[in-house]
Amino acid sequence: MSSHQHPHQTATAGGPRPASGRVPLSVLDLAIVPEGATGQDAVRRAVGLARDLDRLGYHRVWYAEHHLSPGVGSASPAVLAAAVAARTERIRVGSGAVLLSTTSPLVAAEQFGTIAALHPGRVDLGLGRAFSPPKGGQSKDSDGPVRAARTGATGPRVVEGLYVPGAPPSNLNDSVLRERILAQKRIVGASRTPVSFRDELDLVLGLRAGTYRDEHGTPYVSPPVEGADWDLWVLASSPGESARVAGELGLPIAANYHVAPSATIDTVAAYREAFRPGVLDEPYVVVSADVLVADTIERARELATPFADWVFSIRSGADGAIAYPEPGTSPAWEERPEAERALVADRVDTRIVGDPETVVQRLETLRRATGADELLVTTATHDADDARRSFELLAEHWFAGSAPGATAGAAVAPALATTP
Image (cartoon, rainbow, N blue to C red; front, side, top):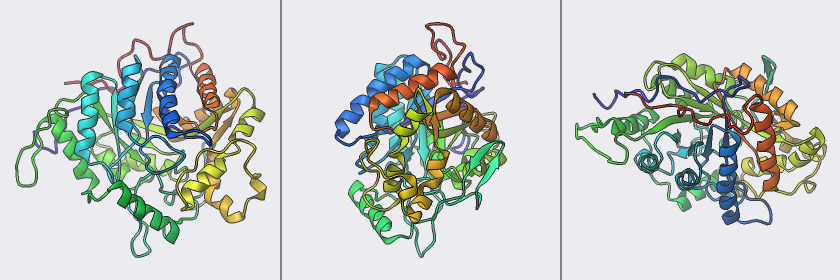
């Protein structure tokens, strides 16, 4: 077997369907840092939340990689995943995603291979393409966390009941944002020059299969990676290289409706069009969504008010995601400058906010419009108890029909069980 041939990591993708018949539901946790708290607090709360998610029946919990952002404590997905795996019983743990601009594919595979050796059948390695600032006034297609949506449809549309906004104004040529990205790369030490995304994924899969050779034919072996019981995922925010390569290799994909809602439909379509049986026999699509559930619609809307400030801080080129503001401290939407509203409207308009019935209905619309095999929800609030309550309410209504006292995913094989 050459480095370009890969063993199947699954025969049937996907987690257990809840008794309700809905698709599996998972969580992306950013370890939000609220105003008045510390990153240390956020990390401890993330681990505690994962124990609740395990009990509530969520299928997997992933941690994103963000650096030097005051409002995000999820900087080390592998470390968080290891800590959570050791403190939970059933839920799958992983990265959404490790960014190949700051971590080499070998190091990421070794980190998650080590976790999988201790927690086989419960680990996901999600990889995202490297991000770099545009050169010569041109934007490079990439899937980094600071990337604003700028591909896909040119204007707003409705697809099977799902609102798909137009892409926000691209600000990647803004000098302030550009300098922040370059400064972060220097501080993070992101000096590696990634090769093609296909080659980076081939490296990971070849090392796991024990067949990897470099361009000179020299074999390499990584003990933590060879035979590792993790599942490899590709994270994509556009219908570009990530979606295409994931399809060509037959890998599962996670499409970021919560980051780039204008491009999600096209991202999924590009992946399906490119798909060839490989690691998976059939396409498998996870779609993310920003969600906030409360007991009433009014309470949910009240808790949601700081979100526009938070998103604006990410996209405006200042210091990255700010510490999450307290509700009641943000200006009303109609009082914001028009340019500010334009920059964040796509994410504000597509955030799914409301009581449980409203949120479940809108998530079902998202699933139907994208053909998602699984949904991945993320929730940002100032008060960690409000986020915990949101996940609890959503689980109660999404998993409706489960046996009393049982979790939806208990005693079921992992999502992408390894097969010979």
